[in-house]
Length: 157
Length: 225
Image (cartoon, rainbow over all chains, first blue to last red; front, side, top):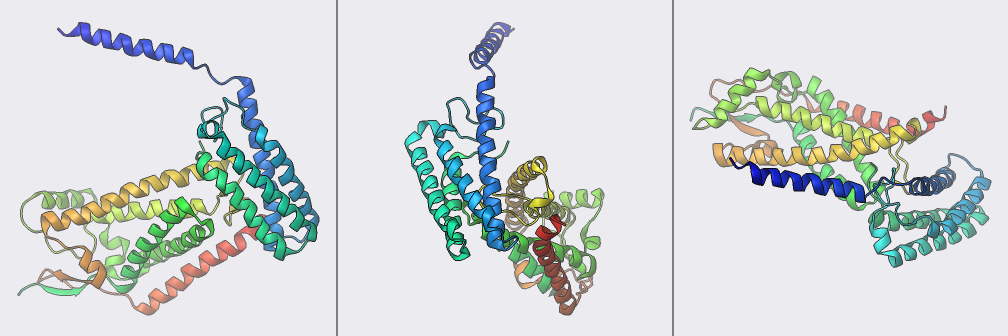
């Protein structure tokens, strides 16, 4: 009966699994909190862009909301470089941050800088209250979001 | 010659089918690369196509009606036996029993895709018309459903194309030509399928288009009232 080789293979498989599980502890509280904090900031961006979108589409005419939203975009932009600590990639909580973010830091930094520039340009347009200036700058902000999301954001879990 | 050619697929059904092919291709492309606004417009178009198809399946030409091509398991089994046996198939009049159910499956998946899409946010600056109707958890679930349904659709489309090819390669049954020209050979004693009028098709298409337009235009407004 060929039990010995099968038993050996089974032992190796179980052993490696055990070692693997031991070597990769579940994400700690700090990592989960960091993911939650990042997603909170992204939600602020969502609310801000929603208010701007509403103004441009004519759902409301409160230009004060647009200026406040512009300030939010800049605030989150200033926090952005610190929102991606190591150990918060896909697999940690509901993180959608692809691991490539940490192997391509220079490219990611450029994209963050581009977003902050777009947010600054938008703030200048928002100060005028003029839809004709606000709309194209808003689209540029959207493009800056997309430029990072396309390569580095995973689909929802 | 005993068999003769007759109109098996009417114009509205054929237009529906090929419009869907082009639209789904465009949706796939824009879904991967954007722009999201084009993806959404094509999605509304497909939703209207599907609404039309349902109405046409209830009120339209004979071969398009669900009642005419949806058969029980025994008919499906018999069709498979014909496929596996040697020799040509009997001339079909419209969808065969197996094809009929795969049509329903495709329609269900496409409806799932176009309806779920109405509730989504693209993580940048596009909110689909009914996004305000759902909370965070439901939106995330519909987003996952939208993506899973698309994987399903790819498999179904691949099976559909493979089946059409196999019908031709193995059974010498060309199913593409009738869906293009509408005409196919009928068995000598088979009656010609009844066609519903183009006027009815235009009315139903207008109803479908109006319904989608109303949903997309008033949906966002209704969410706040």
